[in-house]
Every structure is written in C-alpha cells, then in structure tokens.
Image (cartoon, rainbow, N blue to C red; front, side):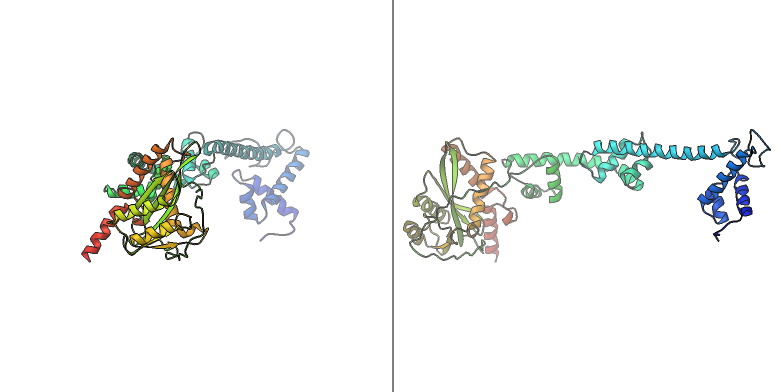
Length: 415
C-alpha cells in the first residue's frame, strides 16, 4: 500500500535496494515498494548528488557500496548520476529515430498513394517498402493489420490470375462494343455475353469496363423542338403516362425530332413506336415539319402491321402537326384513336422522347451533326434497322423489339 509520507530510513533503504540490484529498473523496484517510478527516481538522483558532493563516488572518497560501484550483470562499469542521465538520453534518441522513421514512411506514402488511398494500395506500399522498414512498423504507421497484409501477400497468385482473366474478358467486351458502334453500356454487353453462353455477373462487367476505359454513349441534354398549337378538336389523354401495352399493335407513341446536317440546316424525323415491344413500327424523314411528315410515319406503321391499325391508340404531344385536321383524318382512315398529353409537359410523351434521345446519342456520339442530308438519312436508316432487329432494349429484358414480338407471338399461340 502506498504511503503519503516516507521516513528517511525508508528512502535510504529504497535507494540501496535499487543500487544493489544491477538488473533492476525504476518501474520494477517502485512497484515492489509501492511507490511511483518518479518518486523512486528522485530519491536515487538526490542520493547521487549528495554522495558526489561528499566525494563518495568512484574517483574520490570512500569506495562505493557493493553492487553500486559496478554493474556486474551488465558489464557497463561504474554507475553514477551521469550514467542515469545518459540512459535516459539513449531512450530519447531511440524514440527520435522511431519518429523520424515514421515521418519518412508517411512522406513516401503521400507520394505513393497520390489520392488512391485504398486498403489494397496500403498493402502494396508495405510490400514495396519492406526492405527499407520493418513490416511491423509499416503496418503500424499505415494503420493496417499485419495478418491482413500477410493474407494479401499470400493471395498474390490469385490476383495475378484474375488480372489475366479480366484482360481476356475486356477483349471480348471491346469486340461487342465495337460491333455495336460503341453505344453499348454494361447492361447490354452483359446480356450479349450471356447469349453467347458465358456466365458473367453484371457487376464484374461494370468493373472491367471501368478499369479498361470502355464506355457506352451517354445521354446528352435534349433540345425541345415541338411547337404547340391550338387543336381543331379536344383530344383526351388515353395513355396517362402508362407506357406499356399487353400486346403488340395496341398502343403507339410518336414525336418529331430534328437531325442537324450542317450549316444551320436540319432534317426532321417523325416516329411511330409500339409501346408493347418498343418497335419502331413506322418513321419518315423530310426537310420540313409539315403535317404530311407525321402522316407518312403513321401510314408506314400501318403497312408494318398489315395495312391498318384498327383499334390502336396513337399518343403524341400537342405539336401543330398532330393537332391538324389532316392528321385526324389519317387516324380515322387507318382505324386509330388519337391521344394527347398535357400541353408543355414532355413527361406525358416520355417514351417517344427517350427513343429520340437514344437515336441521336448513339448515331452522333457527341458530334454536333452530320455532314449532309444523305449521311444523316443513311445513319438513321442503319440505326433504325438495327434497333428493331438486334439492339437490346432494357425494358424488354435485353431483347430486341422484333425478337420480343416473336416470343410474345409464340406465347400467345401456346396459350
């Protein structure tokens, strides 16, 4: 039990015990006596000062006490006040060396990571610098476990094998990406690989594409070209943003979009899209936006479906062409019921808007326009044909529109 006041006799005995035990430390002796390390140290230093002043230490005066004059166990020679100070200085110098080493490690790490501070990068840093510093110190400074580092090191062969496999997969992805004009992202490439018989996870495809810099075409901001106009008749909204249909040929949407062909000139594309299969059932291109543009597209859709569109709904925005009497007459002649969304609300015709965005995104691929009308027509023709026959659609389970219609027909026959 620790004492609050210690007698002179207790202090003398405590100092004698410490000095008579060559292997003793302040901590061990202080613990045995029930005093603090600092208290014991102060007593020892005070005793040495007193004895040095009295000439009792080696070099003058009476001989030192047995066990004090020489540390026989360590072989370090006479023990005095300077020896204690030197021992503490050695400890401080050792600590300074440790801190300098840690500072050096952190400086090297700052350059090494370069903003990529990931756990795997830390392990790699430890491995790359284990000849300069101990693994224990490196792991301590970088705050990773040594066991984790050794597991990472033991898995090096598996990582190398995975890198080789990823490189081979990336080559397959590049071929598919190039075959589809560089427009496919990870979902469609995943579906393409699965159709080829390869079992692969979409997350791995995303990771490999990101690692090898393979990117699909991204959506650009759309420029609105619809010109609202008062309709000659009131047309209800029969779709109400439900862009689905139970079977092909029942519900269609359409829109007009511009095709830039240089020198501030444009062609215009009118579309008719089946909401069940997302098939481009009819389309028309012209250098004007008159009503015959949208009539031609609707008639093309009728030819695709056998000559008429009996019972079908056609939904559009409030563009002047769709609100004209001529278009209403064409709808009546082909057996179509008209539907229109709210004025000025693009979301009411989102399916057609999305189609136009995909077409221009994947044909222009970042360019501002085509070099001329012929180039634009051929590009749209090629894309529209591939869109219907081979391009995978996310809303169709990554099937093309025509493939989806064929499967729907088979299911209907089986039922």
